[in-house]
Length: 370
Image (cartoon, rainbow, N blue to C red):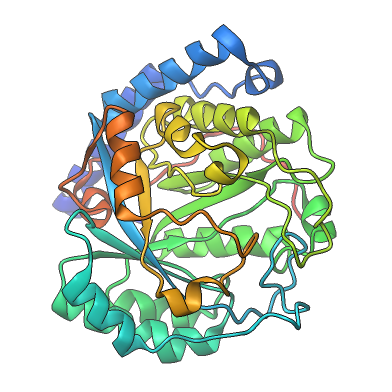
């Protein structure tokens, strides 16, 4: 948090006030209705058009292009919706070597990539042995912005990652209902997840979160609640992912999410927070052939190229082994089809240089967590 008192802090605080006033003028903190979140046809097209226009007003026609490398599928958690849950004894586990990943990213990454997201199951061993040295090398050898998605960690590991050069932390709250969160065996408790999000933001991280649409037993009411809950958090971005039943999970026989509801949530999120970075997630193409492109047309403005080595990719099974891998060709084709162009600015630089120096949550009634 910026402390008021110094000249620089006052300038940043005034800039934040100006930015907040601008955002309120664009959108008076409206949360989409349940009817809007489940709409289709002409009403849905109008919703998506409004969201795409809101994205353009804030970001122009640029889409951020990052890559992801998945460095470990070990996980100490047991989420009912994830194929890497610790109870999946049939899964071959791996931890990549930092030097192997670094060499590829330094010498062979696509030229369109400005940022890298380093992702793993909740595996503190991989954080110490793989992620920290990888971040150190990439910060020294490349201009890449660095984000990490590693779950809940001890404060000393958050601090170590930040000291080495990572600036963006992705930690999803998954769903806003504490009882459902517990029923789904999501990591820890919802309240501990929220505490981690707030701690990360308070210590200078740019935090992105996200939720899942279509979890078993969830309907329109839960969609609206998730959006409202996201608005209470100190975030710089948020994702919306469709539920995909994982093959080796207790939810294997549950139906997949409704892709239209997922896309409507992306659009509603964009209208709720025009300033947030919202990714199009690869899982959209598992529920509909053109889902990824539709996500960009509904207000998403971040795309991700998967650069996980082939030898590991098949075992990083959040959903299914038959993954839809977003290659550079597929990603850039989707960006072009949506009338967008790859951003020359990294996401990390955008956060560093943007007007909104301190993310502020929308002031809404916060759902209780326990």
